[in-house]
Every structure is written in C-alpha cells, then in structure tokens.
Length: 269
Length: 265
Image 1 (cartoon, rainbow over the protein chains, first blue to last red):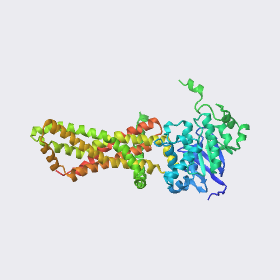
Image 2 (cartoon, chains in turn blue, purple):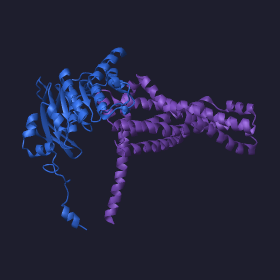
Image 3 (tube, one colour):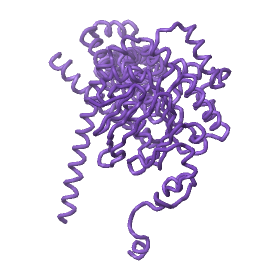
C-alpha cells in the first residue's frame, strides 16, 4: 500500500517504463501538490509525454506506483479509470479536435457524453467556456477553418469543460506564433487559478513556461535530472540545463547520433 | 549458401508468425467490439448517421452498377437461351443470378471499395490526429462511440443495398429483354415469379449479404483502428481493407453457397 497525503494530487513512486526493450523512464519519484503548476522538460524522446500517459492511465508502468487523487491508476478497472478521467482534462499537442464537429459541438461533446444536462444549459456552458478562451463568435466554424492558436484554444475550452481537478498539457505551445503562445500561457494560468486545478505541462518553450509554473522538473535519460524553481533555471550552471536553456547544439545531449567514428567510416571503402 | 537458407527460413517464420499475431489481434479486437455493441445499440442515432454516410451515399453506385450488370446478363443470357428455344426463361435466369450470387457479392465488393475504405481512412486519421485518444481521455470509449456504429452500419446497410442492386438488375434485364429484344412481358415476369423462391433464393441471398456486411465492416474498422499513424500507414490500411474484404467476400461466398444450395437440385 503506497502512502498518500491529502495535499498530494499526483504521486509517482519508483516508476519504470519501457517500450519493448527501450527503457524510457527509470525510477521516477515525483509528487505534485494540489493547485500546483509544474513543467516537465527535457530532450525529445526523454519520456515527458510518456509521463502524461502514465498519469492519465493510458500507459501502465512495468514497476512502481502512480497515484492520482489517491487512486492507484494502473490497477483501476476500465469503469474506474473512466470515472477518474472525468476529473482529468488533457490538451493534446495539436488540439485533437473532432474534425467532423464544429467549434460549438466540440466543446459540447463532454457535456453531451458525460452529463444529462438539457441542451439549453449545455448551450450556456459552452458559450461560457468559449467566452473564456475568446472564441465565442467562432462557435460555428469547423476545425479546418481555425488557425493553430485558435484550435488550441478551442481544445483548451473542451478540455476544461467538466472543470477537471487535474489538467495535463502535452506541448501546448508547439507550432504557435508568439501572440498565440502568450494567449495560451495566460489562459493556462488563469484557468488553473479560477478552477483550482493542478496542472502538468510538458513543454520545450522555456520562456513562456518559466512565467507560468511553480516548479520545473527536468528529465534526462529516463530519470529526474533536476526538480527546481523556475528562477533557478536561468542561473544554474548545470551543463545539461544550460544546453537546454541556451539552445546549444552540442553538449551533454550530443549533436551526432551515436555510432561509429566518422573518420573510420569514411576510410571503410 | 547456408546463411541464405537460414535467412529464408527466418523470413518464412516471420511471415507466418506475424500473420498469426495479427489474426490474434483481430480476434481480441472482435471480442472488444462485441462487448461494445450493446452500448452502441443503445445509441441508434449514431449508427443511423453512419448508415447515411456508408449506405445511403453508396446507393447511386450500387443502383447504377446493378442496372448495368442486369443489362449485360440479359444480353449474354439471351444469346445462350435462344439457342435452346427458351428465351422466355431470361427473367428467371437473371433474377436467380442476381438474388443468389451477384447481388450480395458485387454489392459487398462495391461497398468495400466505396464505403469501407473511407471508414478505414477516417478511423485511421482520427487515430493519427489523436482524436480517438482525446475521446478516451474524456472517458468516452472510442470502441462504442466510433468503431461499433460504423461496424453496425455496414451490417445494416448491406442487405438493403444488395436488394436494391438485384432490383435494378432485374429492371435492366427487363429493359434489354422485353423492351429491346422483344421477349414476352408476361413470360418474363411469370417465370420469374414461379421459379424464384422467397426462402431459398431471396432470404439466403439476404443472409449472405448480412455475413458479407459483418466481414467487410469488421475488416474496415480493424484496419483503420490499427493503421500506422502516418500518410503511408493510412494508405496501406485502406488498400488492405479493399483487398482483404474482397478476398473474404469471395471465400465466404463459396462457403455459404456450398452450405445453402448444395443438394437443392
């Protein structure tokens, strides 16, 4: 039985996960308190999105424990997992809007599927959520007619439709222009405060993220490399974090894919 | 020499084990689909929406194909029948060919090319763009919300489409045989009425189309659900749907025909 404190919303204890023979996460210990916003950072393929998959129950760890709201996620039956997921919202990297539904129906989807609310009330709630993300007047547009930033905002409105306790963001700033990045960043902070959520943000966007979060967890080689306050990131002389923060092409994360020596391969005719 | 032989054995082993593996995956998928059917049946509007997209939108190609197939059968049938002085049997020959065989089989092949490939591409794209994952994260089971209605729509649509194919085929044969060649109108219809049995011919034909609908529907949703999330993966999945569905329909037709019509004569 894994211990769990009331103040903890998410707790991972000694979590190991691998795809076939490729280890991704190795002995992760992470606790996230209620109301916290934390960022998970690290190189590509470092297991950041996998971590979200484990928290949401879409992936099961080979060993270790994943607790969300005190529930051991890997041991939940499908119905129990779905019960938990009604309290978890997730913003996917590119929004994952349903392409056959317009903006209004996308946001109405969770209400229609998960509640017995009358259509009039659903209309009011959807308009409230769309107003919060500034897209009330775009309610009749189809996803194909939206810009990347608008699609992400609609997806955010849909993700928070049922006022989740936990919000997971999978690279919410990827592919957005600076204005949209700023808008999404402010919305994340505002919604987190207004709805009293706990947020986990997987991201590469250092500048925007450091303005938002309470903590930054840096993953490297399947382990938590550092768990620090955002202001420490700018001042640390940790070579890995410096390479990441300054965008240096070579360093602890090598520029070249590991393989044979260049010179010997050239000579190997 | 020895190394290449080992490679050959290894490749053969991989070929068979990968297919057995996929068959097992399909069986597990079918089991999960079966479980989700009860939920999907409780939400019939979802299924009828898919019936519109898969079935109703296939009406034109099925009806026109049926008309032409019936016309061709009439031309070919007349050529043979008139040699034996039984041209009046044209109606019954065409009707039996359509109701027993061509109606269910050609409809299933057309459906696989027109609707099932689209279902595969749609589900594959939904997976690639994380729409299914988003649904799953909203505690909505994609099997009962997306997959099962499309599967049920194929089963529901197929007998109606086959019936329409056979009907327009008979009309095509009537236009050629009666209106253009000049076979007696009364003989054309009365021989058909006397010799086409509702239970043996019509119901067996409809039963065939339900079986074909089940097979084609299952293949299309399975291939879409497990399509690799790339442009090439979805293209491969749609091709596999059409090829595997077509071969399955022809194989099932042989089995069903042997079971249904063996010893009747």
